[in-house]
Length: 121
Length: 203
Image (tube, rainbow over all chains, first blue to last red; front, top):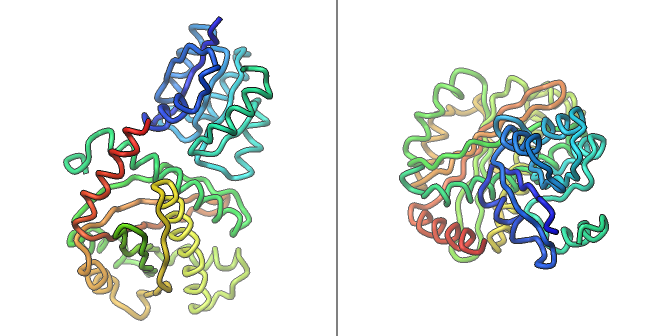
């Protein structure tokens, strides 16, 4: 059965880059959101197995989304894909429950390693 | 800028710039040994002739400095990056970094920071478009020795276009604003559009 996946980034290019980086063997049903508010609306209304989350976004940023996921006890894996690559930021998102932190622009090989590691493919 | 770039091209350029700026912030954070909060930089393409007037109010009323550095890459990619600062916070940051607080040390610090900002940023940008750049030595002008408006006019007049990148850095205890301008030749727009189209098509 396909895994419901949400790609959340304010950049159309970045959303496409993530989608294209996913291996063909990954059976996913892909939804997209252009900011944190849109992402939470989707996350609260339907089951999402995996979220690819950008950090720097208008309306509500990725940190805000992670906090809401934690607070609401939403059951989903989160992989952060960010241009803000400072070690402090990586630490912060990991503490907030993100599975992994990937630097932009997303590297497809690295993504496959992470998906395999967590048994998602 | 909307008239020059399509919506897709603009989105693509903004994303390339965000990624490059993320690399520069990380480098700056390591240099300053603090976390650097950065907002998504606003970008705008303007005629370079407009630049002196756009910045006159902001940088002529207070003490300011300008650091400029030329860059040159493959396929005719070339330009001049300038970073504009108000000196108001500079001495505090100089002290934070352990520089002496005299004027010469302050300018030395600004040269170091500018060099991190521009070269890391531009290298990050170049890498994403499969190019690589070399740089000329940075040139520093301070309002203590120079008239900033004249310095801007003098610098901007060699180029037709400027990509304005408004950078706002916030350190934990200080906020630190500066403006980065990438001055480029007029014919570069077509080149940039082609590069952006190629990337958009790739995905």
